Structures are given as structure tokens and as C-alpha cells.
Length: 319
Image (cartoon, rainbow, N blue to C red; front, side, top):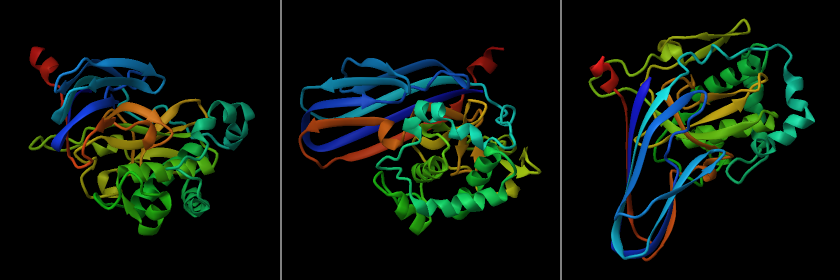
């Protein structure tokens, strides 16, 4: 699937500010699941933009020394995604628990097993894990599918009820949140169970207004039945549209015993497929904010974020 992303972040200041230093994590990754064919990022007021690479993705950065009353960051990307069937490589292996007890694995992926400020290893999550295991078949993959489904069913997607500093304990108590909260909660459960898990920041293509069906959900939703992963219709789980908000989306990747990372989206009860665009990964949200910066001036400001993910029809038009 060829997808285009247009992402605009706008800051407005009531009085001019200066010495603005910014990092931008908006360029989609190129890996086994997707290829970023083109990416452009710009700033208004204009500034030279530089970049450096991390294992988790490319980071762009720029400085604005002069006084300015607004900052608009615009990013455009063209990405081809490859994983149309997330179950093709999702093997349910019996008695694979020993894989996660290896000292070599725990050392290699220690950062994705350790607690963080946003993802503490809360004992309260053990009850959720126990319920998911009862609902799962054999193997870690079936447990993760059951956990993905359970979190989606028990917790409500409620924009505006949480913020970047909301704790997992608050999410557990209120049973609601946004994609960031769902991702942090699932990561915390997995790490406490000894499964390496990482936070993914990116985009989800949910369809286009007036474009018919938003998504073939059968390609992403799964159930665990007799120890195997099976697709299920939307009516089998939810009857609402997919959600990602008018911004970046967040989900989870877990390390499976085949040595591959696989994506799980508890917000939508989806195993990540070709509608998902990865941008950065990290231990939690604090490693992957789309825009991070500091400036000198008034604290008061307004922020507006606009994200559009659409099908790229240019190739079809030429054929």
C-alpha cells in the first residue's frame, strides 16, 4: 500500500519569543515492513534543518535565533507498506516460555524489559495478564493477541481525559485513555511478564471521508481459537470506526520467539498490518515525541496539530 502523510504542527505565541531549539521525529522508518520513498520537512520561519540517525529512526533539528510569534513545522512523506497479512509470520509456538528466560535475551533487550517513569512495572497489571492467559491458546503470540483484545474491551478510548504525564495507575483506576495510555499499559504488562516490548510512534490509515469502507479490519483483527491466530470480522469485536485521532498514533511492538518484533494496537484491537506507518520506537513516549523543543519567552502559547494520511493514487493514475 502506498500512503502519503501530511503533518503540520503550529505554535502561536501572544508575544514574540526567541532562541527556539527543536527536534523533530516525523520521518517514517524504512525496514522489513515499510519503505519511506520520500520525506520533506520545513519550518516557518525558515531555518536550515539538519539530521542525525539513531537506531530508532532519523531525528531532524533546527534553531531559530530571531524573535518570532509563530512556528509552523510541516512534514510530508510517501511510504510503501509491505505487511498486508500480519498473521503470515505470527507463529503460535507451544511451550515457548523458556525463550524469555535466557540471560542473553534479557541482556540484549534490557531497555525494553526495564521500568521507566511512564511505564512502571505495576503489580496491579498481573491480574490483567492472568485473565488474558486464561483466554489465550498456547504460546506467547496467542497471549499477546488475547491481551490486545482484552485491553480494547475493558478500557475506553476517551480523548481529552489524559495527558502525557498520566500514570498507568490512573489509567487502571479510570479505565479510559488514549492510544498513548493503551500502549503504555500493554508495554507495562508485557515487561512484567518478561516479554520485551517497545513503544511505537507513527500513523494509522483509517480511510478517507467519502471513500467508502475505512478499513478491511479482517486483515488485522485476530482471535485465538484452538491455539491458532484467526481473523475475525469487525462485528466480532467492535462496531465503531478505527481511531487514531487527528495526530500521530501509538501502538506496541513485542519480541516473539522467532526473533521478530510484531505490532499490536490495543486501542483498536488490531495486529499491525499495512495500514500502519512506523516513525520511531523507544522505551515509552518520552523517547519518541514528534516535536520537542525549548525557547526563550512567554510560557503561554497555543498548539494545533493536523495529520492527514491518504492513499497515494499517482501510481494508479499513471498505469
